[in-house]
Image (cartoon, rainbow, N blue to C red):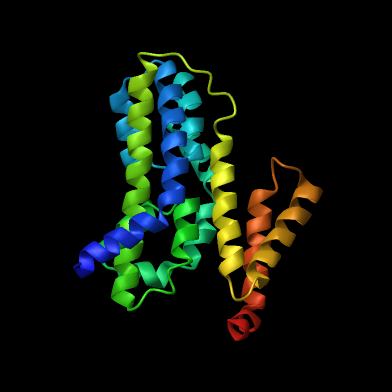
Length: 231
């Protein structure tokens, strides 16, 4: 087996949990978009060039309401503001990947981020970069496939998709549990959970996310030496 084939196979095996979630959620998005009166080509284009997970579901409503570009831009920034914090830990790594790094910035979803955090067990830096790129590419391909299939199916059958968006939460929970079990230190996870819980209690479910992320980043930076010692 060649090195390239081995990397692709490993990337596929690692992304199977994401595939199961993204195909289902992609189909749900495609169904919603088709129900709003848009052709499957729109599902393909949005998933190729927007690829923003939960924001794509919000976008369906914005498109239906003929929202302005300013409204769409501001909403997107607010919904996906957490990615600003995800990207901080990968700035140098993505820069070192050259042209592939540009795609990595674009494709950094919640689930892909979780997978990228767990590639430290791969051999060389080049192997890790190639594995990361293939995982990101596969993750988007799952979403694009699900979106198109959902939009095409939506034009022929009627389905009740109430609650299907919970699959995204379930998917991220599974990835979190797997990393919790495999991690040498759980300090980062504990800090993140503590900040989220406190922020949720103080600010409520509609406003807790961004403050929780800011507090988590600040506390992780403050505890950086302790975290590195425990690794």
